[in-house]
Length: 84
Image 1 (cartoon, rainbow, N blue to C red):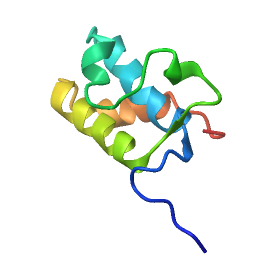
Image 2 (tube, rainbow, N blue to C red):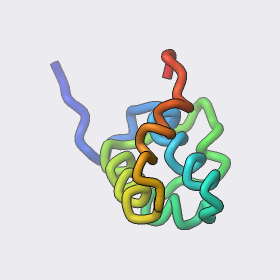
Image 3 (tube, rainbow, N blue to C red):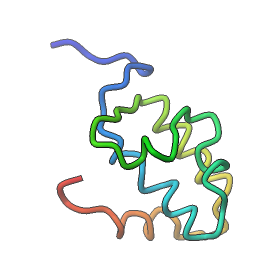
Image 4 (cartoon, rainbow, N blue to C red):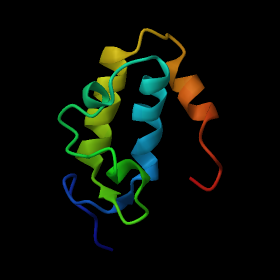
């Protein structure tokens, strides 16, 4: 069984897209939510886009740093669908 490296883009972008979208709902600029994530706004809705574990971690760090909502993780999770 082969394992992907943390920088290998193998996960669907849906794993990450909910966080920047949830930060935008707090009126935070998308550019800040995607700081150092190396994704464009178009990538967030592209079915072909893939992300790495490192990108997922960086996006999570951005959300922790930027969100003023102590329940951010719960609210973002409510926006996820089972298929995601």
